[in-house]
View 1 (cartoon, rainbow, N blue to C red):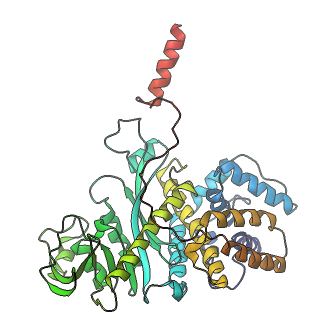
View 2: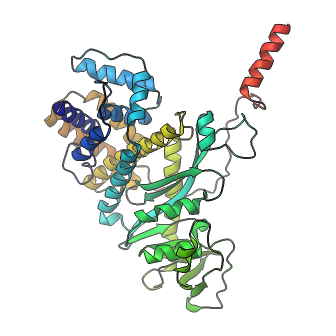
View 3: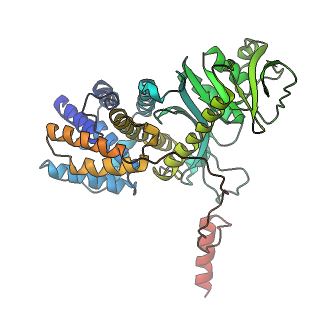
Amino acid sequence: MICRIRHQIKTLKKSFFQINNGEFNNLLCTDRLSELAEISGNYRDKIYTPIVTLNLFLWQVLSDNGSCKEAIAHLISDRLQQNLPPNSFNNGPYCKARQRLSLDWILQEVCAIGSNLHAKANKIWAWKGFNVVLVDGTTVLMPDTESNQLQYPQQHAQKPGLGFPIARIVGLISLSAGTIIDYAIGEFQGKGTGEASLFYTLMRSLNTGDLLLADRYYSTYAILVCLKLKGVEFVSMNHAKKKADFRKGIKLGKKDHLMEWIKPKRKPIWMSKDDYELLPNTLTIREFSVSGVVYISTLLDADTYSKKDLVNLYKERWKVELDFRTLKTDLKMDMLRCKSPSMVEKEIAVRFMAYNLIRGSMAESANKQGEIARHISFKATVQLLSVAQIKLSNVTKSIMKKAYDALLETVATTRIGKRKRPSQPRAIKRRPKAYPLLTEPRADACQRINEAFCES
């Protein structure tokens, strides 16, 4: 049994090219994978063990089709190559095996891989000695089932049966490595489900020496004080409700000054009264204006951190939008597939884990080839590694290492170039098909059609 688990762990690590002792390709820890097999308890299924199931699940979310049948076909092919009898093409056992996977273990692994890559990122990818972290929120849809609706209700403006359950996700993403450091999931609407509430639970993953880039929604007194107490610096645009008056405060330059923010009397909804009372009554903030846009920062030294440097850094915040777009388009996360809340949360975690593992290969390639990880194409890397994983599944270890080194050189050539945020309308050119919108529950629409057919 132990030998079989060890072999399956080696297969999983090999399938994601965790085979060398490089800086970024030793992300899957053998001890941690062994722990997954232990905490899963006794399982009768000799085919869909926890390690095999996790391996299939990871490649399932990376494939273009993303179906359970494709994952099972992948396993059948592997077993035939190993002179083993093929497993059943029925997807029932595989789906049950996915349900047995530990969500807590996967969540811990996502954060461990993301934080590890963020901490080990090449120092030339840092900004003036800071490890830059991006934060933003997004939403995902899921199948319209009763259990999903109970846990993640559709938007209130939609009639019953005409919408999809929706969840809000807030994530911390490393600017240098592009990995997901931590994330939180909540309902789309309701008390304590906003981005600030979810972000408050993620502050545990920020460390001294980090610099957070966020949109103006996060530019509040309570958030900035909490970050400052952790030794985390902050750069953002000024909140829409705050008006800067450069005639006041300590002048640092033209439209650049230090201001003292006063603690609001009303606490934020996501913080307890006792915690809020412990916060200091004032906070010194730097406000500056460039091209008519007001920015704020906790970096107060104007000589070390010029307005131009800070504005150029803040432009990098746009990359978090691209990262979520990559997850929702390339990894098909815009519309999830699982039909229960527990499996939805597990699917999100596995997608983030696969995303971080691919980012690890990109970081390893960039590190060896002297490139910047952010300049490498994620989609091209997935395509290269997916095909290589199938073609090289049965080669020897020495051949695999040589092939992986060659793959890393190829990955480094998939540069996307320097991206500038375009001034483009949020609209699409391609017209949709001329289908009418569903204005009543599908079951009612089907019944009406059947009744009309019977009458005719």
